Image 1 (spheres, one colour):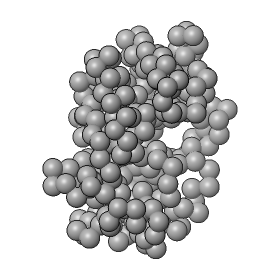
Image 2 (cartoon, helix red, strand yellow; image 1 turned 90 degrees about the vertical axis):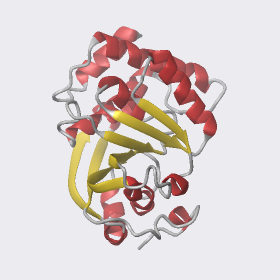
Image 3 (cartoon, helix red, strand yellow; image 1 turned 60 degrees about the horizontal axis):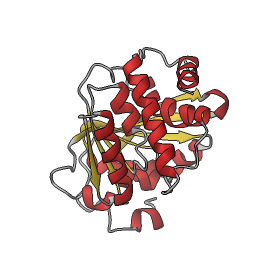
Image 4 (cartoon, one colour; image 1 turned 135 degrees about the vertical axis):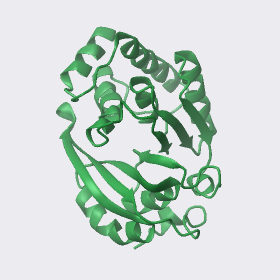
Length: 241
């Protein structure tokens, strides 16, 4: 199975990435622990090796398609709503130069991530149990990250309210999206502006046989007002418009 995963990684043709044997082994060990833990805890519905390699690993590290110097700069990156550790853990494995803060509201998932990082010897990951609204108001984290990423399943307006407050001026909120994202972009334009952001770039690519993916680069061009994010639940229930 390990050799199959290596073949899928090679087939993906992500430009500019060299994944050493040590990194491939860590990705596979992460897969094994994910599947084992998934038997007793709902972490992912994607368990088949090829689908997991493409939809979780390759999709995660595709961030380099839009952040071209991802492998050479010591970016401070927040992964909000990381779930089982995506995109954060694959990024930490493949790009050890990065400093990653993985944030999730479910402590069981954070404990799983901590176990994985200890097992794999990942020293560039900090896993934090917190709601998005709370960490964005914490002075130690607010507007402190070069990049905030999220693969969370939520509309872009809500994600922007959660993520842009964490991004420093001149940094980026990068959202992982799939087909149909253009409707979300149109609906979120005013929210992004209110939050101090501006859509600067987007990259479309095919994730093998699994369809189209899009990376949206939303630049932080103004400080975010202290009234955002609003109180818990509101950004999701009543997205800014």
